[in-house]
Length: 254
Image (cartoon, rainbow, N blue to C red):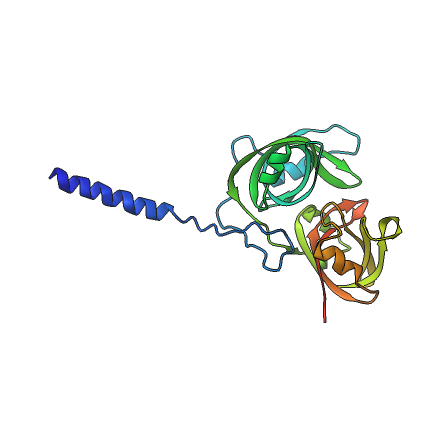
């Protein structure tokens, strides 16, 4: 009888391990704009106690040079813009919205651990600069979980008040016409200022050298564009006085 009981318990343990072995998370850690971008996981994004939802975060009002309220969020790394002097600037997102984390305290070793999709808990202060909402003076801890956001098509939101609701998210624009390309300081090596038009209105985009440096495919591709080319664009919905997306991928149409 004891032998049968031991055998039964062993079988229960085996089936339990099989059931827990695959959580359905097959996300990769490719950067946004890759040729085969990873898909988002389907697991629920449950916030820990005391952590703001995106809606709660977005509802906190701040003004430039005004009071900076403390916020605590849980989010996922989508792109790393820069690291310098133990400070990291990164794009992050959960399933409801995007967060731009500016100069977060981060060692070089921890920066290397912040691969695309990594879940982090961030404590910092919500601020705004030139219309761009940021979390500044932040600290973080790495958590269990992985999520890479799909690019949201916001083409039809250009020129509307609803566009800013997608600020800092991974987005895409389709069928825009190249109007003008300018290099900061007049030559390749720094940011590229890209003017694109849609339905007769012009919009400013930027190839940010700290996010996509001159050796990246997108930097080189933008440098080869000509006025009149029609393009599809992927990037992050950054703001600088007005919409000013940071481009991470671009392709000619037709």
